[in-house]
Image (cartoon, rainbow, N blue to C red; front, side):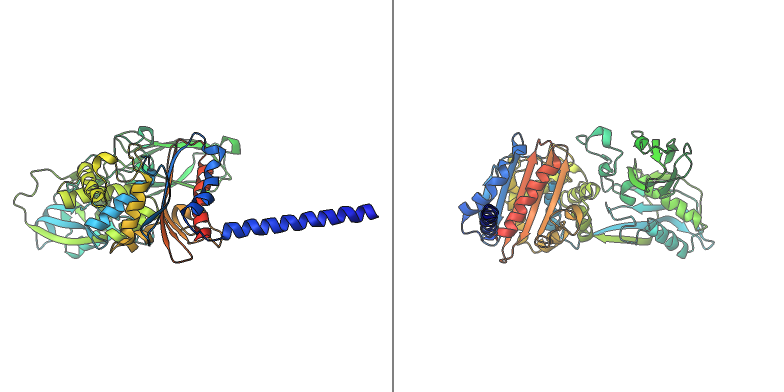
Length: 495
């Protein structure tokens, strides 16, 4: 009995010691930072993770309020940045164009409209590079904008169009995709082409729907329904869950979509998006079909604008559609939409340099980098979205950018466009515990062997911290994302 009591006493003493130790350690973690060395000591354990042994990474953390560096590790080295490139592209758009800049797409009648309702001429859709001609801001109705255009044509009394439906995409060049993007992924939504006239993010939405009979061809729900693309579907239902494997590809330079493989009968519906080739004709085709659906006869064809068009034509504006840069930046960063970022960088080229090319857009972004203290030879920019692995920035460049934008007249627009921890975008499933939820506003980024997280920490003491964590050449994405999250959470704990 005495032995049992002795053992119990030892156990209770051990438990008490462990409890005190844990409380002490917790207090240590919750203790606020006193100086830069203190922060360094808090963060260094995260970098001793064995998984980082062969990983190339850099970190920069600055106090926006105090305009001072709090922590850095290889912050001047260049890294692949993935979608953190969008921070630079959208900030340059706010700097040079502002949130109220409007994309305007015009539908014009070129020719004579007779009293009998015949347009002796063409309908022209003149693009401005607007990425928002979709159902995104119209309750998901993909056809909302072309339908409104068709109604506007009808309201002008036009019943017959003797000429063509012409797509004027001349605001941009016709280099639709970047040569440094992965060639075997160009049919994916994140490689959607950039164009002066675009529709539905320049993609077709395809949903595979479960069925009941193995061997039957899989049913598809496709939007928008249009003759502009063709689908060859040989994918069949299977009862065996292990056989559930299919592919959706597009033949290069065409709009022939191939679907093959097997789809499990008890699966939930699975939605994907396939990029479209020559987006201007995509929009013009959908519009022509919408005109015909509204009873308007079109004798001509759908075509792209030619240099010799409209030398002496009478022009009647029928309708104009507009969207703002603020809307565009919100989608670009919250949804990490590569297509939107590419539209923005060519818009910068068109509006600031007079040339709607990637090269001109990059020149504008380089001018912006010079404003914040970095010269072209110190970094490399290859696109607006970060899909190219050729982009190279340093953590210091990104935190300098973030600090600059925090004091910018339109800095709040950038802040509001960033994913928020535990709430939305790429951070909706990260750092969602009550203590950290909504405290981190940051842009995620991922391409093969590259992960990035850069943005702001909204600290409890009122400070705003800007941070950039760039990681290359890792093996396990979840491991490096956890380290990124641990750093951000430590900053919330410490400040």
